[in-house]
Length: 158
Image 1 (cartoon, helix red, strand yellow):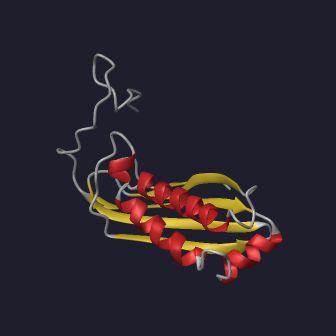
Image 2 (tube, rainbow, N blue to C red):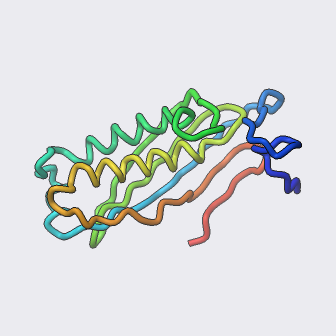
């Protein structure tokens, strides 16, 4: 396995990885994260009755938009013409879990796009509900799985 840092050149300067010679493959990545909140905030956010309206619909659109802009937000990320991005929500005991899947057929992975979608959806939920609970906690944003590319498939340990 090559242990070189791929985003550094021979002199140690940051660089964008050249993916021009790579073969394009179908790539998918799934990420998740949670936002913990009070019971009252959870009910309002889940039911769409918060002071700013439908928090889940707004967070879904924000997450999708963010995935599409990942190359603009994170230095050295390649801008990708994504094939699909989904943002889903699950109600938990003390909060909401956000899960995003991004897919693309190309020469670089979509892990950052999936994690960006989750992160921005969570921040949007915070913004939509901060009038109800300023103490909400965003936590555990992580990659769950990825497929495609030279390194193949990967799945997080439970």
